[in-house]
Length: 370
Image (cartoon, rainbow, N blue to C red; front, top):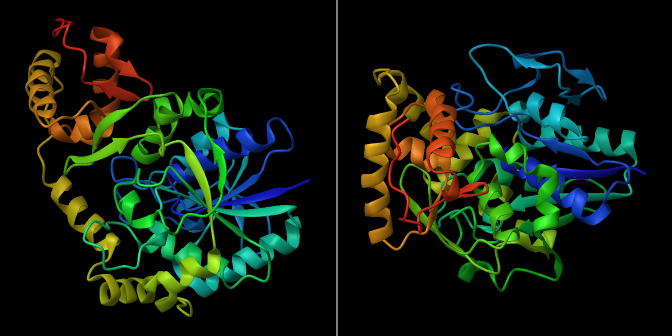
């Protein structure tokens, strides 16, 4: 038996796909997870998604589809979380290549479905921004989801669209999507989060991190991203809902606009027309800005002092939790120092760790000098 899960936006959606597969099917044959190599700039400083030519060590699955095994490596300066995911999880991670637009992705999917003959195909999106129209002011990264939605809707196969953790990506408020969510498929539990717990120790996905945290019972307000977006952690957080695929396409104006695109540049142009921007343009601009930032030495004492000030301000805004990515950016640290920050905090304030989030509600322990 083979199952296929398409991670709609890549990144954390691929981790959530592994979590879903384990929750629904346990130790049965592991699913093939089709995903982008499209990571945050703190992982991959090259804007946009990677294609097969950006890697060494890929394994052919079909003529157009390659898998990313543990021994694969991105070619510098590119980076990718996929080889490490393949090393730590039992699934096969196959690479979505969007360089030939939605039409190219459709051909890849058709080849993969023909080759695998999967017993089920799920398109999984964490947060639910795949249901956006395209003009929502809170929308930040619609292109990846729109491309996978456009491709899946053109494949001659039965594909189930699932939204996990509605609202957790901060792009489409759950109030805006309640009427779109169909039957409840599953509610994640702490046990369901265990198979990916070690991955979330290092993986930078904020939405999937909050998905796992809510599955473990964490509730409150989590501040994320460089802009400090507040995300409610509620009982809706660990839920997974089915959504009608055709209804999602009819709602998603960008997905409809890119159905016949044959290049990523063309899809980007449609995104600028429909949404007013391309998320890859944002990555390009931020990458240029980051390149010009001076590299400063990591000083634990200074970092802990700045952390105290940040936490006081965040608590005054009603924030109860945050992510290590948010902390890294709020403290103006480069992405390369994220792991150093995490190690420092785990050493000095371990009681504040609400895996995989940072708990701001405990004020008992002040900064401890390392």
